[in-house]
Image (cartoon, rainbow, N blue to C red; front, side, top):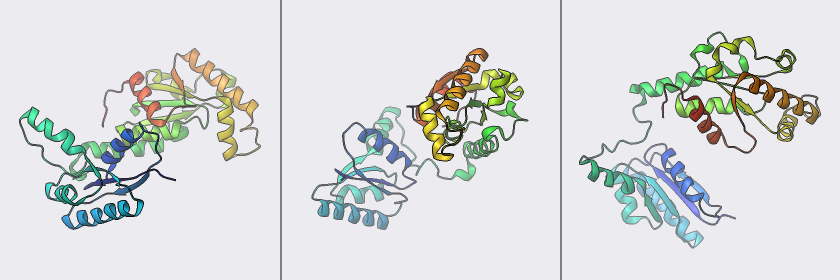
Length: 273
């Protein structure tokens, strides 16, 4: 059962409101129900949102929590004057004090993704996503020098989701390359990687967790057996140590934590947020 209903109201995608709101809510032992209300960009839509919020409070017998990033003043005033939930206005909290500090007015731009057709950063991010997809699991290695980051590790250690996160969130061209039994027999990195050590970061994982993950994909196979997972992890870590590659275990870390650690270590020349 949920403790509270939390609304995220925005005149854009709502990503900022939800990300910030969830960070705040994580400080409390709650299991709230989340309701997203994006693209609330007219007065009429604002009234519709308020009716839903107020009705929820009436049915549940407690006022909902409302995180909002409404840039349009007229639209926000509808919530401010008629919403019966607990209204947490992030723009009012942060933008207005900064206006006073800077001595200028904000442009009240709606959302991070407004007018993306003219944004070079957006197009760079799309290019990075396409690059990362085409360089997943060593599919393409002829232009690895274009990579900002190259992730290595055994199969199912978290390389693909981390690569895509780095591309989508930071606009980085992230390649990933699996370490396989043939590499362990030769006891050296694949030839394609040897000239890019400064861009390489290794991911490893506890053998028991790796076996669980692989058994979901290929149950009762040698590939997923604990003995094979122990061998691959042991050899991969030894290879990374010999090659001087920085690495971490993904066993208990989120994609966000993994990506942040990689960025601190690799420090790509270009970063996009």
